[in-house]
Amino acid sequence: DNAKSGQRSYYELTIKKLSRCPQFGFATSGLETSELTPGNGVGDNAKSWAVDGVRCQKWHAGNGEEYGAKWSAGDVIGLAWDGVKRAI
Image (cartoon, rainbow, N blue to C red; front, side, top):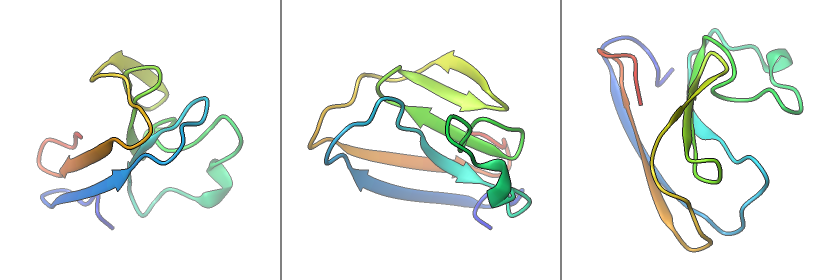
């Protein structure tokens, strides 16, 4: 459970190809896979946080906020989780 309070995590991913709404992030162990449906993924509920480099937004509980720069194929994206602040 990388999103536990008080823990910090970091990972990197390489963008191979962009989809329409790519959201990458972190979720608590309380997130049920049944809650993840087309159009409803990480960042779209209160148990997860995400970033989206196509729409340049960060997401939590379905609310987007302007964040970051546009991604392109070949970009390496670093994602950090701060469990104290409960934020990416």
